[in-house]
Image (tube, rainbow, N blue to C red; front, side, top):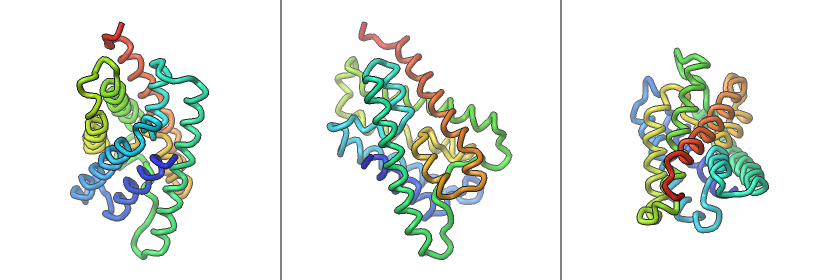
Length: 217
């Protein structure tokens, strides 16, 4: 819950503060990508030893389907990730309400000229890549790189954001999308299903791929 709160507050907060616009404000896009990645790195080394620092239902689903956690733990992780996202979004909403010129809570939405299918595919593909990195970097068979898992995961999230922001604003995380959309409303809320279905399908695909290529057995 705490980790997801920090991710949403910092990642979405930078997007709002810098005015992230993938067409007219490229420096803000880069800043937003780094904010999400750095938030993951910071939390990985803060709470990784406690919970594994999933802070993302798509990652939790991937871990469950890979046999790394029980169904009960999976459900509770997802619940508290969403709760944490709402806390982060609430704090950001309170801040932006008191600053003229700052609008929204960094909610995901389809960008200009991007179709529903295009947005859905983007979320599936890039979530699959991201969750695959998580599963690989934290695998027992990758013992030599385990100490650097947080860094690898955070850097891969930066990369995913740099590619995907132009299409969907980059979710790859249902919790990160649900809370900001509720506060922001409008088309962000109407298109929210894309940012729930896409990442969860992508996470499941990553688990399937990892099962095929994992060398543990």
